[in-house]
Image 1: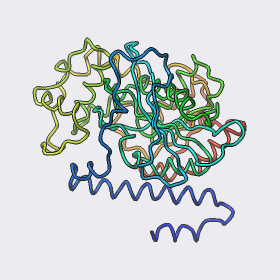
Image 2: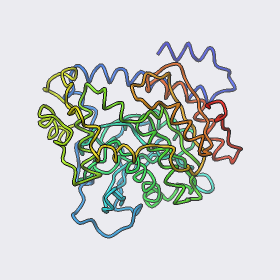
Image 3: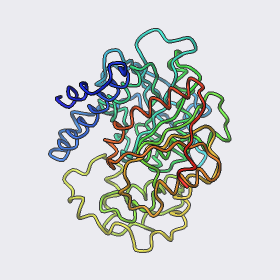
Image 4: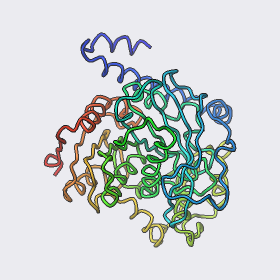
Length: 406
């Protein structure tokens, strides 16, 4: 860990919290790099080591027991995560609402300090994760490090509780909506009252934060809250940009189109996947529902041509993408958008999305970093994250640099 020792020499001794945060963030980046290299070498063996099997905790009866969105179904203390000993973890299962209006169950985990809470309870960060597949076994709460465990534990050590949803269908026996920002945002919002029921030491005030596609969900939380008006909601952070989704699928040479078709089918059950998937892609559709990896399948690079030539013309495709288009209804609460240098193939970039947000009067603070890699941006931006979050819970005035984005 020479990087950490060198870093310590250049940090002001008064910036103790920041130095702890940076150290942990760098550790996250280094661990992510090691994990990627290991996964490339032996995906099945590594998955077995870094994941837990599905347990009965995640199973839900059909139909579900009566409950409104946010009602807790059950919870359990879980002590096997790779987390510091001072971080407590409780798994939760709760009611949420699908895009179809169906009562569904979502799972997640609540992390909080193992000590006496402050007056009013622990301030809450609702975490929205990025892409992880569509199979039940893809739930972050089934991974030993919760995908971003050191990063989330950093915030617990700073005195916050973290509520990390899996999204419906990851863990529970329902269909997952994949990149549908509205569905994922609904799961984030509904996780908050469920977490409070499971862990009464949580406070009433909270912010949402997400990385990559989870960042889209975090901003969608702000837009949905414009109708809900939860007085405890204080704003959202999007890490690693807000590029619109369509361009990612148009230029995809991996398995993403298969997951796209699955997500559209979840949101619009009348959609048929062969409307956009080629014959080459159809066999992979079943695999996507069963596993988070593509072990023993052809290399990613050979997966071009999974989408039909005119797939974008599908009415359901356009409706699906429109549900995740941000900046078309006002946000309730301020936004912090953290972006790396753009290497996006999307025709609508983060800058353009931010312009839409600003144009409709949203309070947006934008911070851009030179590295395009999300794993590095999450660490590079820790200081801005902490300052913004502290400001929200302290009730300080909200900064906006919208005028510089136009």
